[in-house]
Length: 478
Image (tube, rainbow, N blue to C red; front, side, top):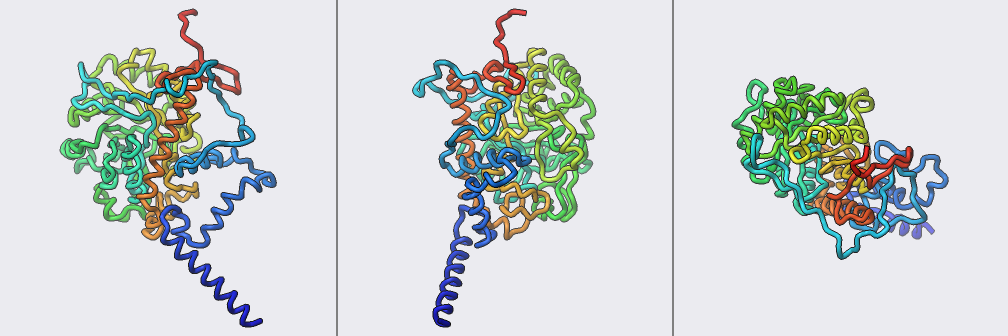
């Protein structure tokens, strides 16, 4: 009997050791690489959870900030497995698309043809406009906020998917350039990477960065949805020697950006700054902001008409529900209009001032699934960008540890052991699959509405279910 128990114990130990070796050597699952053996309990719960949820009090659609239904769709898309559902919708939508009686046939459908950002003639013209090939792209995420492995994965995946990625305000790192993707270089309030000795804009440094062929556009960041009125925050634990060099800041000291650009204090100064950046770089210049005062939009766009040389080539509208690694709860929860209100306001203002052909609109704010992206396009956005959607495609499990440096999946980690678990070769493919699946499903919605492509979406293709209010065709009637 004793011998039998010894044999069983040895077999168990060997089995555990074999599982351990398998977990640390495989590259598909970061959780298993970082937490061998223990990580299997998470995947067990994830796989069998749907069969046990009838006994739980928390439905799939009530989790925050992203519910299980949204995350599951992204995970499955990134893994390129089926996203079909059974038995019916799991949640009541707040809007519905108006399908056509005779949808577009499969053989007649068309993919997004691309849209140019930047004009080539007249005041405010770009020497090198950008032809954007995708309506869905990667929003700003700084190196430092994200690990080098995560940024590398995004860069490689963006290249494979034919989408752009923004650097975020933390400067241009070698990892952004590693994959060869189209890059949007963001100038935040601290002007990381392009600041002079006095904290102002260094034209020489900006010119060097813009000389990179893959840097396609420049974005002036006024504010982001998670913390309008406050600059970026990178905890001291994340400010390594390499990150400090890229940002030109001290090592090991928290990196806190000013709450606004010191040289942009009004609309006219904003226009002058946009014109200056475009003159230096020759490339399209956009402005990222959060909508608060609707009157400000009209005053801004009036100035764009009056002084077209300072008109941005695009505006990036970030909803108040935007995300970040570290933000005061008072700002993250209570300040800034949500994208559902902000986007229609910006679109209406653009049309009132006849700037539809001059200014492209980029929308952001928890737009991570096809229905929400299609909604934004119906409302008038030309492009949609996402940060957290692509974080989920990398394996983010919404552990809410972004600012600690201890992200268990390595996405926002600063601990080398945790970062090592994230394999860029595998995760880049998942980034590509997520982008492709989302675009395919948005196009599928368009075809269901009788449209050949998503660029034909209009307000009357969508209805607010809760209030029963639909967009209306412009018939010319009062």
